[in-house]
Length: 195
Image (tube, rainbow, N blue to C red; front, side):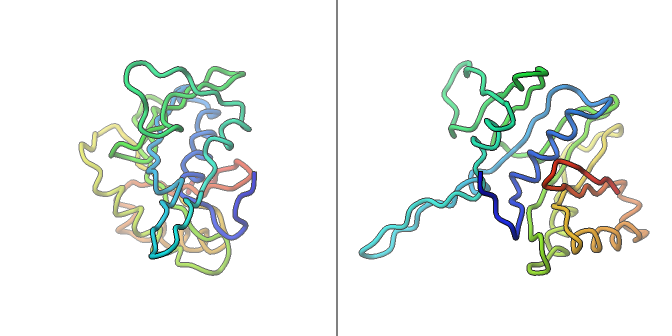
């Protein structure tokens, strides 16, 4: 599976965080991940006299298959996207439901609390704007509907030296500390650093 060297797509951030959480003590063995179709494929554009093909942003089905996940037969109506549905890990029985409905990008229970996460993909090098992507995800986490007293909110972004620097700067802000949001840096090797 070929992944871009210079960036980590949002779908990859959410899925790698979900896989990490499923292996953590106190986390439920199931997680819900919202992945917009635009995070997986860019639709073809029709130009006069030619037609571009769809371009894959993240090979979600191949990623899950290589990780020993299998999709369970759907109950009821057919899924809107071929990668929508509930997956089960072949070896440990963990379950992951992938959908494109509204709400947080990732949701599970951890130590008895509801954990809701907003994810953003972004550059792995010096190009791009990690700060703008982080600020956008924080804004989304702050405006989640139906916030409950006993929930945790996280923001997840790719790990890079630039994202790490920006996250460390933001977490020192008194205004950010009052939000109670945790920042998660998601590494491509499966590790996650929570600030």
